[in-house]
Figure 1 (cartoon, rainbow, N blue to C red):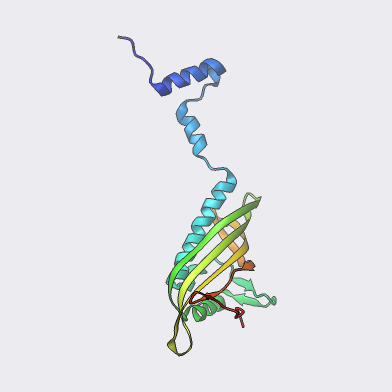
Figure 2 (cartoon, helix red, strand yellow):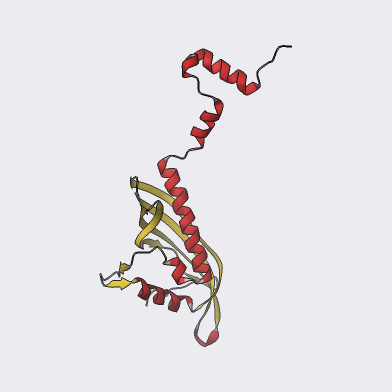
Length: 185
């Protein structure tokens, strides 16, 4: 009885007949090459995964986890240095009014590799939460922002460098109504 090659085997034989038997690549090797991500896609996936960890830390209000791989000293908008411990205290004070997060998404919108271990990352953030206001009043607040941050790969892991720069803020909705209040005042 004669053995007939499988469909994949016939395709390989056919490809070999066109290219020549010495240049023939088995289908498994081709599939493995296709599975490799180009550098930009690999960086994007790794950075989005790190951002997902930050989102979870924010939802848990875990400043230490959020800042675990942050720079030891940040610069405030006015250039004043802020130590990681001070930044953690600032976050805890801000989060003290957050009763619970309804939804928080941070998505990598685009990424530009500066070189193999450095990337400029552009993200969009949408955060819907319940805040406790004055006299215990509860309000549903929805904010959005578009940001840019430099990321660097150190010891094989991608990490944000410094604080993200807010490029644009969306409307602030309080109980579904656009607020005229300016953040930070």
